[in-house]
Figure 1: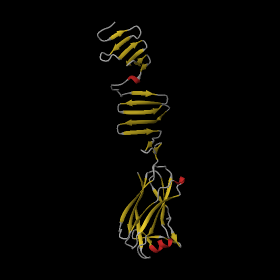
Figure 2: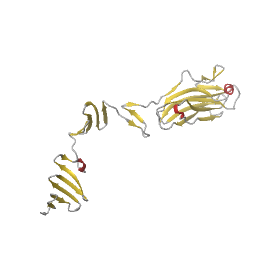
Figure 3: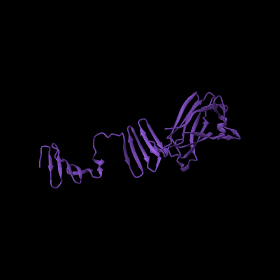
Figure 4: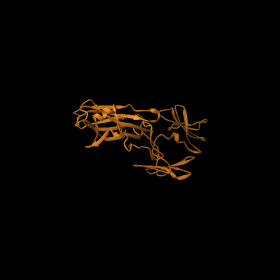
Length: 270
């Protein structure tokens, strides 16, 4: 029986509705359920067991009280709030509403853009501190520290530096590799008559994955010059790493002249 509404009552398929503008698009209703068909491929939409969600393609779902249950948890939407709850322990849940996320009884895991975890089970695993050794891990010559502090600077005398014959340690430092960059800001003064060099050198890091040693020199006249060392440590490994800051004088000045330096920043950063 064919009527003006494009409904066919067939013997094999049941009641078939054909789209007037696209005959490849059909809706079929029979004792097995309600089917939708496109280009010869039929999908079950409704049967005696319920509605098949795969066939919902448009419209608005009223979330005043929607509950979706699985074998271990339930997902409930009420108004503007979505909540996932463990069916065996109601204290374990995640709730999302505009402007807020609440996690109860479990943990939140967050990954940085480089794939490293920054929050694990709700605990922040990001320690950016750089620690100094105390007392200072300073080079000595004949029981005397290579550097002394006065006027707000570490000062290294040329005769002391020459007697050591190489870079002298100012101190040693350690940190947990939780950020990409190590940044060290140093202020230089050559008003004491000597120029010099500063070097950053890693040591005793597990696995031997050292950063490249970096250094820079200043000549007399570089008064109160600030310089930032920026060292790329690579993707965070969360392993402990250690480094020295060292200095030595250059060939300027007399034996009693001095090279001065101080640090205004030693930090990890991304």
